Amino acid sequence: MAVLLWGWLSPGDPSSAAGSGWELRADTTGPKPANNPAAPASLEPTAGDFLALQQRYVSLFAQIQPAVVQIFVTRAGDSKDGTPTVYLCTGFFVGRDGSILTTNAHLLNGAERVWFEQDGIPYAAQVAGIDLVTDLALLRAAKLPNNFSVISLSDSPDLPPIGTMLLAVTCKRGNDPGPSPGLVEGYNTDYGDQPLPTLHLRTSIAHDGGEGGSPVFDLEGRLVGIMVAALPETRSSLVLPARAAQRVREDLLNHGSVRYGRFGFLINQFVTAETGPQVLIKSVEYGGPAANAGLRIGDMLLSIGGTPIHTDRDLRQIAFFAHPGEFVAVRVRRDGRDVEMPLEVGEMSLEAPAAPSTTPDAGSAPGLPLAPTTPPPHAPPNHTTAPDVAGGGNQSASGNLTTPPPPVVGAPTMPSLSLPLN
Image 1 (tube, rainbow, N blue to C red):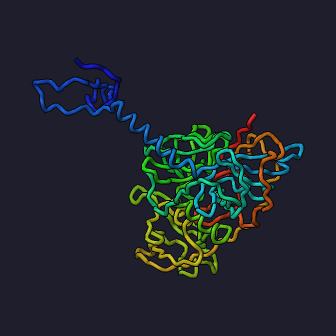
Image 2: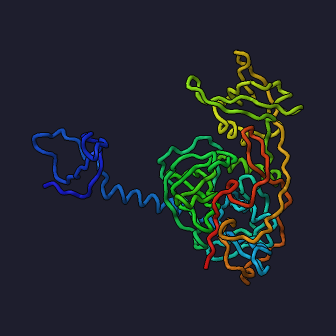
């Protein structure tokens, strides 16, 4: 006897399911019909499949959870009456030396006190470096917890395909670490008309207060990135890929700030029906890296470092990972001929922006502010202030960093991550 367990859409008659090419099938638990012994087994998922998926989430969370901590940041002057305000975010251990990667660098820049909690126990932390371009920060625990694990960052350029199932471990609104599942929805190099410094993953994981800095994994246990910004209109989030986070972490460990490269030219992008999108050099900085390499106005960019360039997005991605002082091969089309020349990447000069001085509100404050208060009595003292490091700015089509950013997470004019805890 056939039993309908649940409806399931599967490939079938194009006339079914409103002409979508899918039909509603019933799962059968009985034997195959005697007159058709070769009938294929049902492709519908079974209860065992769902239990196996559930167990994978459970085991993956148990594996990640000891590395994730809740971070507290105290800032003075952010409240109307001048009393200190405590902000919450999430972070995770990336080194056995107590290195913790998190976001909200603009809040950590000039913070009065920083600490983290694991299993309800507070530990003092020091700011080892901040990057205001990506808004990532590296902390170092003054004392290590008895039991913690470390999450390894990847330098692989491979990104999870759209539709990949994800698991973030977050400290939502000040709670202990918990699992937040979702999917990769797409890739963003811009938010609205504002460029992001590099490509970000867009996920269906909702980003609520206190979740900035959460690690995000695929179901094979690979770190795919760190949650950096909320997209509240769509109940989704932006995730900085693990490779980009690794690039930032390395510079913060070595220099306390991130050294970004510059090529020394600006571009125009245009599209034709015959060739698709193309990128032309429209100006070359006198005496800059591009000029020294022999690039000229009107050159069509074909590739840098072997990576093809079709749009300004491609160029922005290459510029983010370029290190000052390294040589890259630039290939251009000039007067109908392809020409390749070596270019020594210059270093972007970044001015350190002042710490935010305006009172955060629901429209501008990232992170999750608690009600204005002094730190709890059990919070350990932190006498280390954030180092005076170079700031950041918007990345232009040339890969150069220009204007300093406002105090927001992930990108200029990014939606607020602030959710007052009332």
